Image 1 (spheres, rainbow, N blue to C red):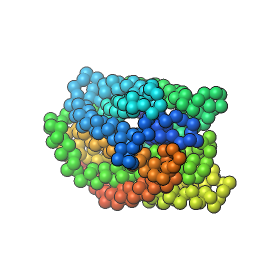
Image 2 (image 1 turned 30 degrees about the horizontal axis):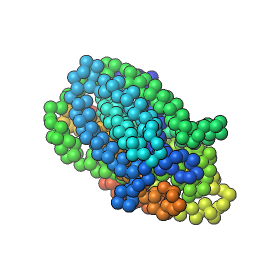
Image 3 (image 1 turned 180 degrees about the vertical axis):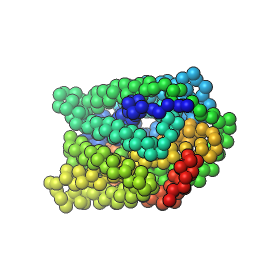
Image 4 (image 1 turned 60 degrees about the vertical axis):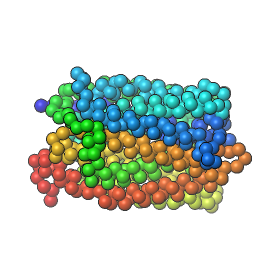
Length: 465
């Protein structure tokens, strides 16, 4: 019989989310800012500024190609993990193999070595971005698949995902502070380019240590002893997953919700510095307000989910996010009305987005784990890898769609050689608001009660009242 995972090992396993918060911040918040710079940033134009068909930027094209290549790896890694017969288990060997490539490939994205505007830089960035996404897959699909196996109790899993999210958002807060550290380095005499690279290098080093600690957190075979490996082909396994109605509906809601979140994170610096006219060195205060408020909301969200369900907070998060994006469209006008108090407005917006941040980061993976557990109970086969592959694929598609659309839309209305226009910044709010509304519909259709009652029934706990 498998043992219960001690909390200290669970916390160590969660350290990977410290790295994920740092790395996602570098990709989600700063990749476009770094490679599609404004004049105020002081960064050089490393990539060519040409546009395919007059509107698709080089950065958007790189992201699209990267995601297409990356998408192939998700089901392959999932299948390999589900059927793995390694002496150390089905999941942990993948984490140990991928940890360092995951960190190193990300760092090299920002170290394109050729002259400004060179095609060579575009190829360099594209190659290492693909390597980053693939190594992310090798690490996080097996890692997420292991959770329902080592933490079979649904209520305990909510606590686990809360710890993960605290680690993730805490490290994200440090990543949001990058502008503060960059300005300190610039004041010390470093150029904008090398100030950013230095900050990124330090954060990647911290992330690499956390990944290794997580990958060696425990011996998988001590805590998973009775899993049944699937014998189905890759295509058949995917077909079985897609026949799960609740999984499909929730995954669509998660996709559109995550796209809207990625929109906000990707264009966030532009919202703060351009729409609200807040200085770059004060951006951190807005982001800190969002992170601290979100972390303070975690206990209330967990308590609510354990007493009621996970569906209602996700519906509320979609509604709040939609309203925030409506504000973004008129954000410059509101900032003009309260001239001199732009930072206060920014902090208020940060507090408003805290609830969607918290709910969207904690709950989707917990819901997916519930669906996975019910599927395993009903079928008698452990397909955690395939389910996790679809979940990870959704995250990647969301990031890809957000970055492709944001990168190109931001350029709308740009003048005088700028790569970003005010009209484009505002339009991103319109697109994201639509995605948020679609996620609201999907979450309303998801049957949370059926899943929770099914788990209790198969676990011998009877029907819920």
